Length: 272
Image (cartoon, rainbow, N blue to C red; front, side, top):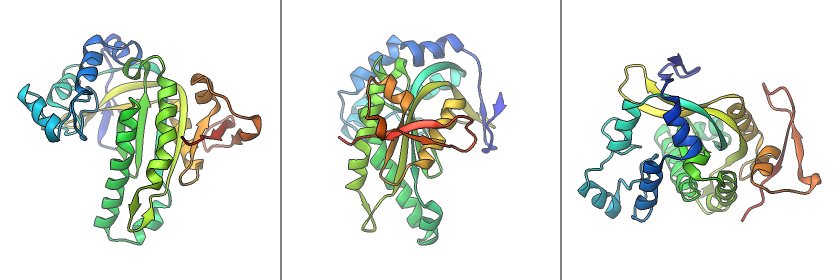
């Protein structure tokens, strides 16, 4: 296991590479079958992996079959959390990724009470996550004032890059209709496509498992999101190519991103 830099709380887990390659690169028939069935049930709060509803009427129906929010990790159902615990590990896969980052967070946090700032972050997450789910994205984690999602082909289908663009295209309009204390929530976003090591990560005491992504392309996406204006989604040239889309050459800009050797070409993503 390797400690995740900057957290001090979680360690990366390796192993079961063939299984996780099938889940995230090729598609596991059991998981994809569950996702199709559970998507027919109503419910806002869902398991991050199988998408079983955990709240509302859909959650009530799921509980009749023995599914419930995990006692260790409420973002997963008890079945998927048990799977993460039983089969820790990961694999290197192709994927598209989206970073959503709250702008001016320090200034905003200084202008309101800590509880109010927490409510702002919660509203931002509750606004963004359903859009990502509807485009078949896998919400990796909440990192402070950021939301991170990925679209691996085994989870999102062979048109994963196009689905990532679909989700990114919808976000600015949805966020523009959301108000906190009478103001829009200022979020900068970026889409990138590349390769990453997707794997389970565990708390040091082993009480909780999550899924996270590691690699150079993950850093590119994060740095590109930092360059986006509030309400803007920057899409890298590689993400455009993977989704079979193009823009006018004049729309592409070259970004010098901190810690990234080569400049990254990207364009503002056109809204729906």
